View 1 (tube, one colour):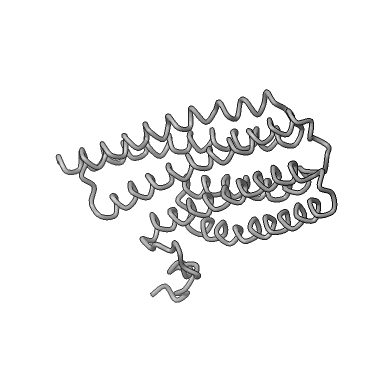
View 2 (cartoon, rainbow, N blue to C red):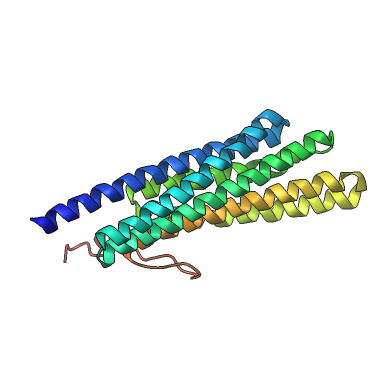
Length: 240
């Protein structure tokens, strides 16, 4: 009975942590959207709000790290459960780093506004697709984590190459601008800074998806060139 009670309490504790991780994810999503919008229109107040939001994200990281550590010490989870806690810790770190990248975008928006550079070139159009792709990847990764949907996680991983392609496209475009008109150099470099931040957000979303697969299937596919095979129910049609 005591073992059963401990197991139920562990599940409750873990679910509370998962809920707060998703809360953190929601804050980070809002931070990204505010930062990208501020970059698009030169809204300094919105950029400041995105930067300020990073303090809450950082505090949540500290709180959740502590909660996971206490859960391990108090409940001493078995192998599968420990895997879930450790992967959750990694996801928390990825979310905090996404917040850092959003802050970079917001700070760049402020720099562009102060220099009066908004309108010097169509800076937002150069990263528009990338911004939407990276933001969508993060949203889908958080949804996959909430539902522990490893199939959705696999799809997210494949989307990362699209964001990488858009980054390379933006880089070529900005280099062309700088070569053709030296007056655009400062603005083009800022756009490249934003493009790199968005590319990194895509990387972190991919990492979260990889940890979802690790939680569900126990397979660490980081730094590999292949995705996991289909789930067993999709392989064995005869039911055996």
